[in-house]
Every structure is written in structure tokens, then in C-alpha cells.
Image 1 (cartoon, rainbow, N blue to C red):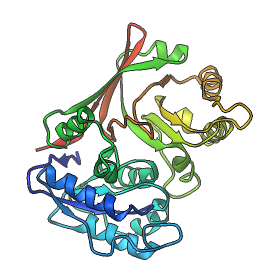
Image 2 (cartoon, rainbow, N blue to C red):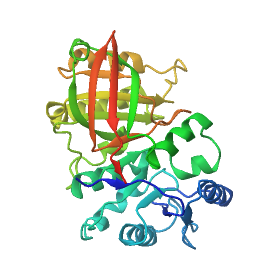
Image 3 (cartoon, rainbow, N blue to C red):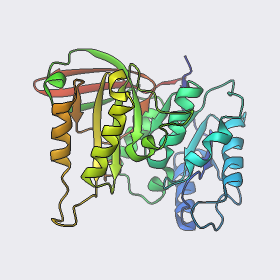
Length: 310
């Protein structure tokens, strides 16, 4: 099993920027945050340079990512920001030889492209969790910063979500479902379809979240997933946070109606309420690690192993 190694004081943390740039003050804040945790941030000089879309051009962003992947003195790759750009690096990443030792990849949103690649192609376990500059900007509450610290430093070996709402009969009947979690940002997952690195949902629970997408767009992606056979393969689907996406005519979203439709359409269990995505609370979700889901007193209870070891 390709477990990642628990953090220790003075560990080197390789910081990469595969998508959008962070502001200089947020890079500084991220460095200070890692130092507060008594870690050694490795933020390469020239990591961020002016570009019309990304933190740097493709070749440079990939060079920094490759260096982090292949560094023998570190076990962690923490993404500075999401945005857009990671999927442009995947074809280059695919040309690398699989590293002998697994590393822990941390990030969310655009980083979904990298999560999908490293979990499916290299068998790594990764962590869908806040990007580094969110800690650098002090947007994480003390409670959730502690949870992240306890997971990374090995003080807890599972993450629990106790208030998932079953949305259909298949979900209400779930008892002791053993699986793994895959997924991430819905729009980014859609971008994997038809590529050599297409999302695989076989024998997994599919977790999805998004920001700024209106109801019809979410419905369209779900329909594409159905036609691509992703729902036939998976154990069920869990909805994280969906924010933004208000309808111009009403100023309100219609997510509830979309999710109700799919709860009726799907034969697989559909749950809602996993606290992860682009909302204020972004709890960590381990990917490609064992998990157990059951329903107790009308609520889904999900326990996920972190995938870390000493």
C-alpha cells in the first residue's frame, strides 16, 4: 500500500503553483504559516511570474512540479492556489516515471486534475484539502486548522462526516458500505472525460463540489457522466458544497431541484452535506483510502482513513 508519511517538525514542504498565481503577500503568509507549524517551506524563486492566465507558463509550472515530485528530501507537495491550469500539465506529468516513493499531494478545486492523475496512474493516496494560501490568508478557523494539523502529523488516522443527508431510497438503505473516495471539483472532473486520464469511478464513492455553476450546467455534467457510464461503475455519489450559480431571473440557485431530479433518476445512493469545496468550511477528504459509509437514524455517517503512516 502506498501510504504517505506523517509530518514531522522540520520536514520540507514543496510548494507548487500549477494553476492561478497568488499575491506576493499571500505567498509570504503561506510561508509564515508553514514556519508556525515548524515546517520548512520550499517555495522556489521565480515560482510566480506574470502570465495572462496562469502563475507561470506551462513549461515553468511543470518544471517546478516535476522538481517537487522527484525531490528525494521531501514527502509533501502542497499547492499554493487552484484556479485553472493543472490539466495542461498532466500530459507532461504522464511522461515521468512513477516515483519509487509516494508523496502526499494537497489541494482542491483545479488541483482535482492532479489528484485524479496521481491516484489513478501512480496509486498514491492524496488529500482534497485547502490550498496553502488559504492558510496563508488566515481564512481557516482554529478548529479546522487543528483538524488538518492532527491529520497531517498523525494524531488522528480517520476523518468523519456524521451529518450526510440521504437523498434517495438507495441511500437510506445503506448499511456498512466499504469503499474509497474519488472525485473533487465537478467541472474539472468533466474535463478529464475523453482523455487518457479520464476519471475512473469503479468501486468508489464519487464526491463532487463546485462554485459558480448554475443548475443547468450541473445537470448537464451529471447527464454526461451518466452517458459516459460513470454512475454505473460507482458505489454512490456524495455532494459537497455547491456555491454561487444563482439564476439571473431570480437571484437564487436551483440546486435543490437539480439534486432532487437526480436522486429520483439514479439507482445508486445519493447523499448531500459533505463539508468540502469552496464554502467557508473546507474539511479534508482523503482520496484513494478505505472508507465506510452507513446510515444511522436517518443520517449518513462516513469514516475515511487518512492514508498516512509513520
